[in-house]
Length: 609
Image (cartoon, rainbow, N blue to C red; front, top):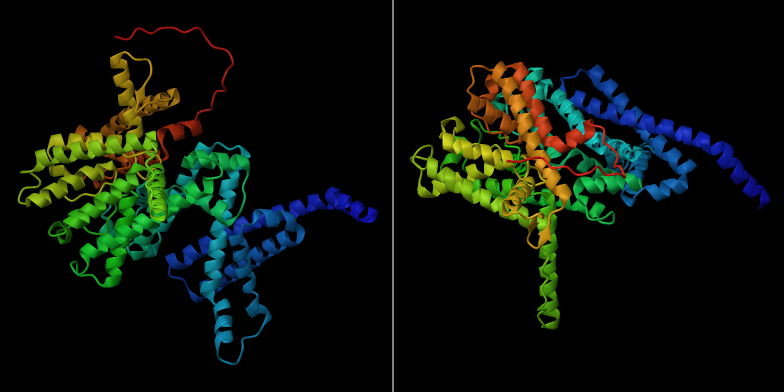
């Protein structure tokens, strides 16, 4: 027994450090292999390759397979206890599937045809190998990115850098020969990639005639990643598949996705992805039911069209595969349900995931209450008065008011103008659709350049306000707008506290809301000023509309985006990036935070008015 204890002490003191170094080297090799695998797949499907290049790529994939097998085997052999604690059940399943790829290596192909031969062929198949290796690569990279949060790195900076990396990757993918019909400049590729990742919808080229099917697949993937948020996806993969992460890491992710506690963190991430897939799937079926057999497409093209526009609408991106966006003649007559479905998807994507989670809690509460009644035949008369939390109430009320005022205003000013010649039902449908799009989708069914100045001003205010916090929408957010208005009302009424629905708003919420509004105006002024100098031929209203649309990630345009020079396009792309990441988030990542002091200066009064 003494000899065994001495061996353990010897192992911990002398052997364990070398094990840590070896596993660290393998982790680095695994990250490198993951990146090389993705680069190889992109090269294979983005270019026309020769037989020799295909052979080299196959050798690369084989090398990645060896690295993954070696990494997992070493972890299990050298640190089984730690591996058992950190690996989730799904990770063990993936590990088992990876070890199954050794079956064709160890055993020859069965000569007798049947189920065993079919299984052997499947395990030796290229699709099985690549799909498994690609999944493991994404999981490893996700886990590595999330682990950076555990190193006390500024989360805001990581969020901004993550978006920037995805934008640059998207830029390269869109420049692949198979992505476009006749090529694209790097500036336009960067602009479209930024617009997709930042779910904006501004386009510097005619998307319908520029990109191939491969290009559209890349765009919709960039939209989905940008709409959900890079950290939301990576955190989900890391925690759901790879197991436990550090406590600090979980605290940071909790703040990012507005989870109530660490216990509900993973469930919150699951709800976000679940709501997204469920709503986009329902939207796809609803859109398909309206367009089926009316647009000259086969069933596969109709489903692809429906999926693309459902994702684009829910993520508030505003991209369309049709020439002329949603003002295409194929849609403008007899497709009012289509515009209503798109509007509802925009609204659901723009109210925010915390509100959707709150809706889930409310629905489950009523279901349990009704189920209890069916079991006991005694109705529970007690009411739960706080089903709708304060954030949900404010967002829903402000969203409803903005939609009603926007619909009525657009209908009033465009009834006999842009909507002339339409039926009454078409006019109200188009008014509702055009009031939903500035919140912040960017689809267009009519030429915005032909709208009246009054309608454009309505568009500007709706774009500037945007959607809800923690949503796929942009703008200063209806939450901040509501807090600023409530603070203004409190000042005018002479009250020291800002109160609403029996709750007092926190001082921090008021400070951040005021800062967001001031910073929004400041950034807009600087960019409008610079672009007005670079583009003297464009009117001030056009430049202002373009900049507000970019920083609010709307995507609506007065047909000025293709006319911009390269410098102006880069500035508008930067505005889209700033708007998607968030002004406050970006500043928190750049500016060094001041530590709280334990002393307090004497208060002083500034003369106002």
